[in-house]
Image (spheres, rainbow, N blue to C red):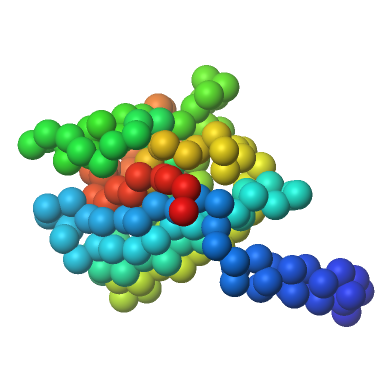
Length: 163
């Protein structure tokens, strides 16, 4: 394999990083209609961007893809129409069109209610998102519809804080 030593070094660094405490995290819980959803999202700052690690269980099994975003609000609270209304809209400090918001993340893919995702993004630093929220939506993000991808109701939320 070409670049084998690069990938071996990257894998070792990646595994070592995940064994450490993250710089920030969010404990994710479901709304009253989705009480079985729980999990954690961890954020690690690296030289190449922010590494995001998500491990979620209890997702609805009827839909495999779920919108996954950083929202600009600081609270996982709301009202009878939107249990996470205070999470506000997607984190979008540059006023970009969707799907180029800083808070637009790859979708979570549920397999029998479980989702695991790890990726690196340069859209934000860990420091920028502390005090914001992570939201999981009931449907897939279509990456087209403005302003937020037509991904349906907010079904789970976590407040991002330092460890």
